[in-house]
Image (cartoon, rainbow, N blue to C red; front, side, top):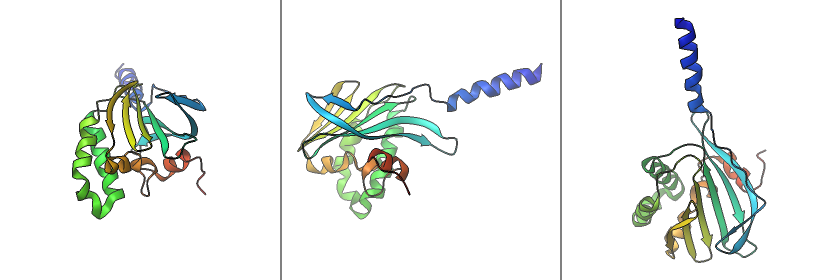
Length: 175
């Protein structure tokens, strides 16, 4: 009987590692009355357990400087965890310039919400304006050039959080 209870608890605990959310991304998306075309998509997994964090897709408009990242969360993620991710990935990308972006990073942290499974986040760069849209509601809007530089940097910047994820988002294959 103890073995059966142990096996039940063990296999039940494995569900923690399996994502319940699955994301589908359409070839085109309309955000703020503008059309964007899918470039690529990927799944961010964390740790050697490959815990699903979120599905992310990259869309571009036919207009220059119009692009967005769309995230569909595979599990609940607290704001503090997201903000730690912002800080670590921006530090890797900005290197010695990181300290000169403290105000802009604080702005990003203040606009980052807690996420629930299946929440949708859109980080939109539309020319000289950036938007953070959570579950269809614009939560933040900025024209700050330094913030605009940061919005997509962790995923498609020179030092992404994951090289394979960046390649998939940009529609490329790793060699």
